[in-house]
Image 1 (cartoon, rainbow, N blue to C red):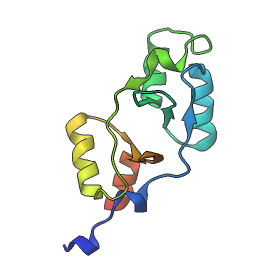
Image 2: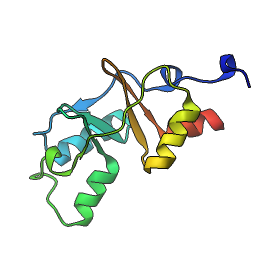
Image 3: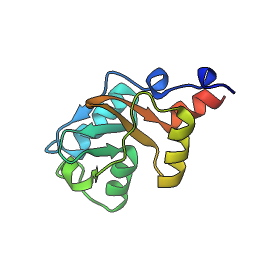
Image 4: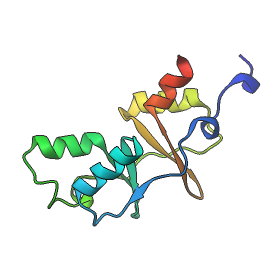
Length: 124
């Protein structure tokens, strides 16, 4: 396969990127994910952070009240990111290596999100 045949992140990433404040409740994050039919949101913090449906599920399984719990209480910080020009094979390798399902796409600032669903869609 030549490099011309390989798919880059910019061809598969979801845009526009959906974000949420760290002060939002976990319930609000779940509602945004449901309304947009996505399973992760970038949290507007520094360092970079993300909240995923897995974080929401974990909070619920631990008996925490999602209407009182803030995104900042359950988000994952210091997340891995990728650039738009990275090849999707490299994304798949990163997801496998780090055991993750979402990678924010950064080109100076956030520009999109790539997920394991995108990898699966490419391979099917």
